[in-house]
Length: 302
Image 1 (tube, rainbow, N blue to C red):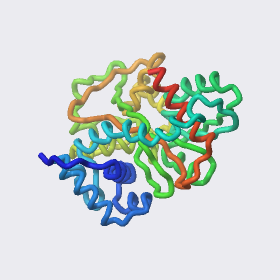
Image 2: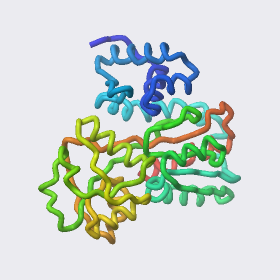
Image 3: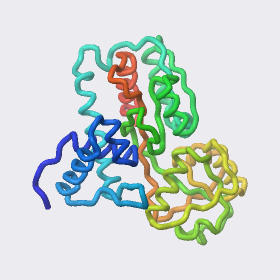
Image 4: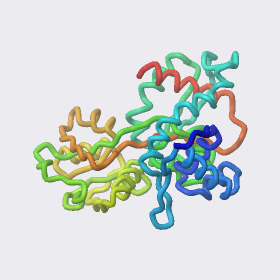
């Protein structure tokens, strides 16, 4: 086991490679050379004495150790980045006033943000918040094209003209109709069953298919495609087939649409949720205050 200390910069580079899926994209986003990014990854891997990435064709994918490192390092990185603002007398307790435009992938917009945004409005009554939803690719586009001040997505970043940082962690859940023989469901033979799925570009779908690929399993073909997690849960409850959705969506939507939960130990269906911002180095005080206040409200409600 190596005894050298890894650096904050190495963790930032590592997180950038995970979120972009490419050394080149991460290098472009961080204004570094590809050689510098590769060297940082190699040094971090040696210091931790674990492999962080493996190659699948032309792509690199994070190992199980890398996914664990991302979960462990994300909150400390975010806290360190917030130190200057939290030390400022104009920090999270400052009254927020103005208009914020938020874009969020549909699961986050429907199941994660409503309660904390409502609480935030009670604390800051002169703050106006406009939320739009779509899939993860749509959200990144809205932020990049200045249609949204900040975005929240479920899947890996597909662009190098936005900055993506770890926000929270979510769990995916495979669900089945009420009377389905779930004992016949195995990770290696999911394609034997009918499936309801999100559309291409959805973070939920991308993470599910990536989890299968990392374990050497083929992705099942979707017989029914829907762009709303709640609608998918209702379709599964009506007998349309199996599906993989956010556990938040499954628990809330299944209150009136009964489904069975399928547990497959071979698959690790956890995923990071990401915050998306523009690459511009100038961040408005209102946006910084909004992000910090939202984090505080979420932490206090957990």
